[in-house]
Amino acid sequence: MSVLKHLPAWLDARSATAAAIAGVILFAVSYAADAIMYVLKIPAALTITDNLAIAVAGAALLLIFLFRRHEHEIVARAKERAIIVAEMNHHIRNAMTPLILGLSSDDLDERLRTLDQATDRVDRVLTDLLPTAGSATKPRYF
Image 1 (cartoon, rainbow, N blue to C red):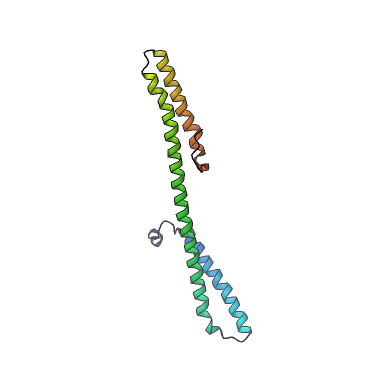
Image 2: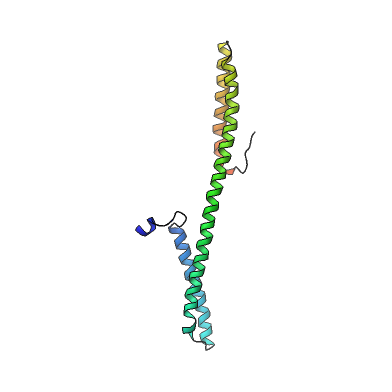
């Protein structure tokens, strides 16, 4: 467990296991090919290091793929957060603008009505916009 604490964030236990399994599978396939070569009278001692090199190369390629996928996910989450912030900024400003204008009125009923409208708008933004945040690909200024 202490070894897993020192691994980078993109290399979790599942990623390391996937890389190890890919290495073992590549090694097994290579070893089966060597068995065929043995039947063909090619000595196995000449090819065992090739098997290890193939396994290490396959595991390294898988780790590169997993690292790139992790970076892509981080960028996608950052874009999604930026979209949410832009949308929230737009909608909250739209909700607050009438409130500022309504507070300058001398009529108490007008101020309360404006406050209720602004509250309803903010409530709508929070209940309608945030639950759909995972599907945002660009800002939706509806």
